[in-house]
Image 1 (spheres, one colour):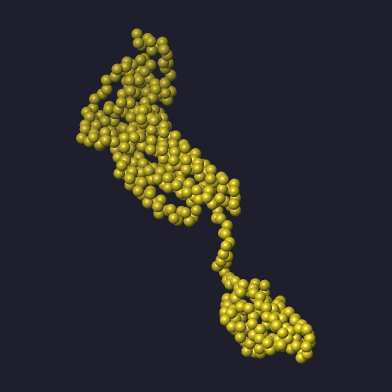
Image 2: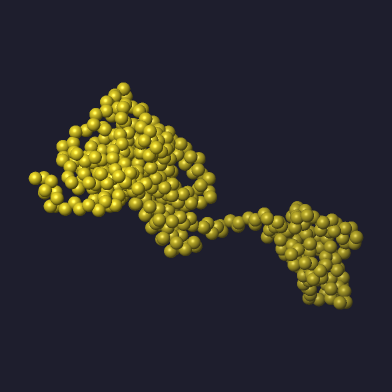
Length: 452
């Protein structure tokens, strides 16, 4: 083994070990043993370590030189052996081996400790250093999805669905800025097992709101604790809340996807603000739920989420069909018959109807539509309303709209078109007068005069 006492020749990044040799000089006379401790760097490889641990190391003290240094014999064979060891491709960490002569006898063999003690193998490159046993890894980053935002969106969805359910149960009309709302809500697809579909939506949105609020509270507490002092039990509950939120929002996204298909295909592309708003809320909640998963959680839950989405869509396509009333109308035919009005018209209503006709306003309706009949009753008998019948030849299932109604893109009844603006549902005389620019007075005196 080659020994070099010049440590400056070795770079700092080289993995070296240190051998300390106590040499007891002997000059042939008895005197107290004097030891000189010399610390020299030794370049070693794993191969030399394994051989050193299997065999004992012999060291002989040689005659002391005048300059106080000690030399190690071995000649060229020893130096060649060490040179071969030094060419090893893998290096070991720092180690210390102490060889001490117990007496002044230079020929006394000394057994060194195993060179494998405290040897830590290290490698260069990207391979990480193994974590020592008993050392706890620092916690990973805490997922922080905007759960309070999700709770607010879900609460809004629950309120919207509750409003639609109440209107459906009471038979009222919903406020709709564009056409198609009432058509969608009155269709058979708006009911499930005899109850409004919006009632189920209110319950689902309420559940998502509760999960989001629960998770947001735990998130705030974990953030306050800090990464180093997280409560493991609380963190596990937080992870469960995020997973439940993700699966619940996946179910909502599946329902909304099928309802969008119904609007586009089954109902002919009607425009329903409430339906589109609900779909937007569901997809947004799904995005927040997915963003709240860690990379490991998303990889583990993604197959189950895809299966849940597919099952939800298929289930909705099976259980959500048209109402029994609509199904029983197969083969039923209604002949066209103009309604008989009970209310009498007034001078104001007749003048307004004449003004609407002169300005090109149109009222599109169906003879069997109760709301259309009530709109005509608002004007009263004798008022010449600019009315367009969408089923002049009668109605049966599958009958298309008339050409005029088809050109006006009528989605529900009644539908007013005034100055290029489309209004769906019944309208008051005052609103029709305002939209058409009618300036007549509908005062109480004229109404009394008309009655008498």
